[in-house]
Image 1: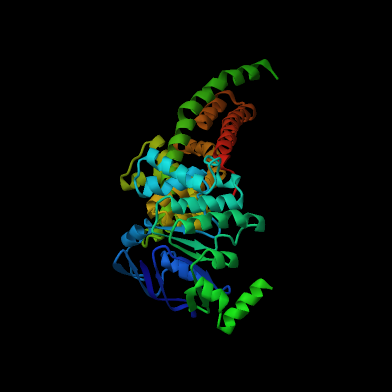
Image 2 (image 1 turned 90 degrees about the vertical axis):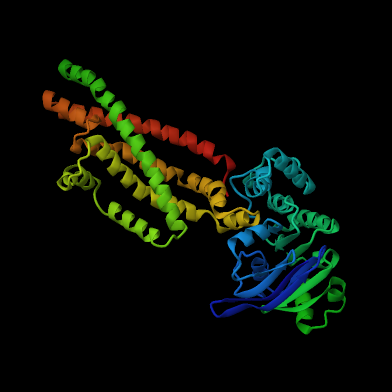
Length: 244
Length: 222
């Protein structure tokens, strides 16, 4: 459905991404794992043009785009069909939960306001925040904010949602509620790419694991296979340090 | 206090207050409004890094902040006629004060816009908004809240700076006072009186500021 080919990125002589390719099928839930500094987040950000890749292409809806030279217009068009969930939520601080969710519909997509509000409420209900419509981000816990973030990504019926370490900024006791929502989305068949450190999510929810190290994809296999038969020593070490 | 002095003070109160309401306040409001428009445009040009225009904006801020307001008034009102440009006192004062407010407050606005976290802009892009939409809907409202106290400061400063316009024959509060002093020769009491009226104006503004800040603050801290 979405193909990324040969993404490379250099930051002051540091090759953060080395010729990375990823093919995402409809309904895939891809967990991207790897030690910190391995390029996971950079890859995800390049995929949605938050970082400009030096080289690379993207095939989306049957059309091929150059990740480096893509026009602003095409960027905006593709972003309207994708969702992004940030590590630090990045909710619009001057907007309520409901306004956060409807902003992209009303302003970017010119949807009539009543229709957007209706849709926004459904999205917030889905993440369990039906009693928090009019709360500002500052009045919500981290877990609640992240669930608004997910609702904001979800409300536009995107073809794919990218998650950038969605639970890493949360207190341990708040991680569960966010994972639960993500689990539900996966079950509904929403295509997701999730950069995460949550092994339980990778093992139980994702159908594919992409393991990155040093700017390269070391392994791209079904989750079951990844955990049952890690093969590579580096992956074994990574899993050991996480579980110990 | 002698009865004569008391009479002078009560007689002059309205004679000072009326020019205050007719000149000082309109001069302040008009100059501040135009100045804010300049400030916003200059700040946005710098934040958006528009080549050429950005350097022009830096030059403007440099010149205006680096020269005294009083000298600027003199240049425009007494200097420009040499070049055949004659401007009436009130519009001359509005021009100079607007340009001055624009220069100082563009820096306030620029800092406030840049203080909005990058994540807010990225989130805007990710929900499909364009840069102008993000600016208008997300960044500027947050920046304005941050900038509100320093902008209030500049407004209050401007109220008092308008007294400089007396130097270019704008009949505002201070000039009105000077005239009464010339007639009655009671400088101490009369200048204290006009100071008190400035103080009242500024106190009202300070109250308005704190009410507005409470309303702006409704979405709380980060």
